[in-house]
Length: 365
Image (cartoon, rainbow, N blue to C red; front, side, top):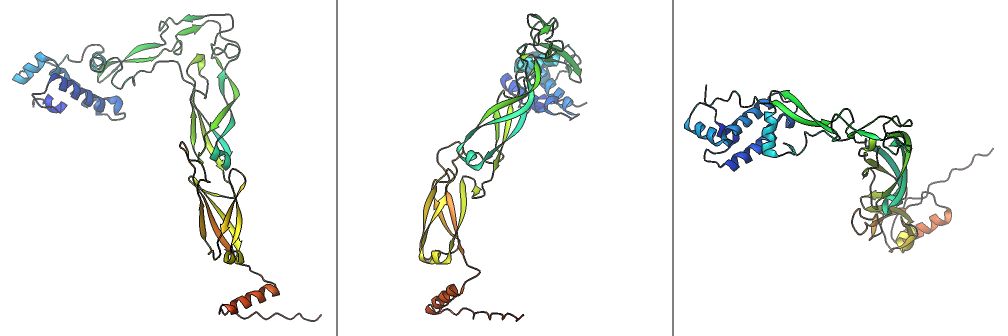
């Protein structure tokens, strides 16, 4: 059987220092641990190889004998109760391999709630305070979330000693791993109730409709999601509440087309107004109008940009622009006077419009 190369397993040279060995193990442990590779049946074997290499090279006596080529008896290396857990704590501390990822203790958290708030374009542009209503679990008004009947007291949980968590040993290919989990008896609160509240049956919460005021910031777009921390579902026995997520639905304004922080407005002028010039009134999103000069000879599709009259930028100062597209309206029907005037105008300019269409005679009855 070929001799294992523990240095290659950790990816370090033979002359490496103890600190570098520990550093290499910390990196590889996070990469190869089964908790970081769910569903991978080979993860435990890879982690065991890395742990074995570290256990040999981190011990001065074992490393000296390994470097001499001695045969090492490693049969009982990880046979002790909680040995892998002890190894990880010695390297990563009490926070664990993933900074507390394996800790599952604590009172149950309330669920998050998702609602939709409809606002007009002007409200989305300049900000608005609006109320959203939704049904969820709220704190019981009788016991104020405690879960105990009024006038009674709670008792310290005998299972967890009031800590709300217990340590459980889980066995696997890696040996025994200690996991901190929520106490089943008290649900993580650390206390038990002998006389439950009759209104909420000891849970501390009841089903009801809540109304929450939402501050919609200026400049939000359709589909923006706001998070209100702690405004979601109330948790049993005063556990941490969930969060409230509010999806903003912006109702379009038929006058404008929104393009990020810019607004596009289309106005129409007659062909004579386009030729001779005119003044048109452009409605503003905040109310009122802005007068826009149409210069003589304006062509169809001419665009004017009114700086700073669009939608305020989200999270920063300033506003977008109001972009005005000028469309020239060509009449489809003319009376005799209008047609005669246009033909005289065409003749003066050397144009040759089509001859007037012959009028159909009415049949005698």
